[in-house]
Amino acid sequence: MQKYANESAWDGLAGDLFRRAYSFGLSAIQLAHIARAIAVERQDDDIEKSVLNGAHSPAIWFLVGFSFELFLKTAIVAKGGCVDDLKSIGHNLHKALEKAEECGLKISESTRFSINVANRAHDARGENRLFFRYGGGVGADVETPEAMIASLKELLAQTAPLLDQPSASFDSFVVPFQP
Image (tube, rainbow, N blue to C red; front, side, top):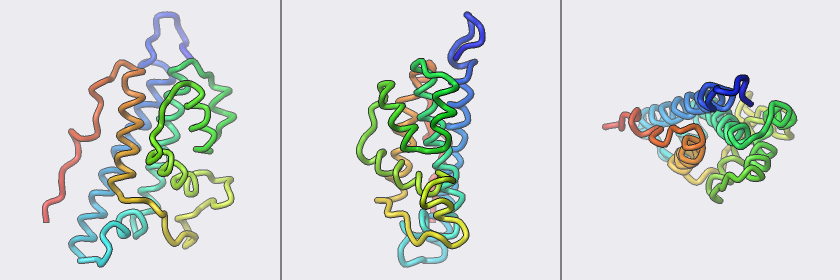
C-alpha cells in the first residue's frame, strides 16, 4: 500500500506495521526475561509457569498478541494486501494467520500453536476475551517461554526480508539473566 511510486515498503504501511511488531515483540521478550529473573529470585516451584502464567502474563501476552498481529499484517501488506484486508481481520489472529498464509507466509506448527494461544487473550471479541485479565484465565498451555520467543523470532525472520531488513534480530538486545 504505497502512497507514492518511489516509496519503498519500509517507508510505507508495511514498514510501519513491521516496526510496531518488532517493538511489541522486543518488549515481550524483555518482559519474559524479567519475569523469569523474578521467578528465579523468588525460587518459584515452576519457573516456566511463572513466566507466561504468572503476575506478568497479562502484559506479556498483550505484547505478544500485538506483535503476532502486526507481523502477520506486515506480511499481508508487503505481499500486496490492502487496508481493507487489514480492517476485515481486525484483531483476530486466526484471520490474520489465514490471510498471511494465503499471501505465502509459511508458519511452523509451534508458531501456529503460539498464535492460537495468544488469540485467546488478544481477540477482544472472541469467546475467551480478556482471558488473562480480571482473573479469567488459569493457564496458557504454552510449551515454554522459549517456544513463544521462538515464534516471535520466526515471524521476524520471515517478515524482515520482505522489507529489505534481513539482519533484523531480537537477539542483539536481549541481556541474559545471570542469577
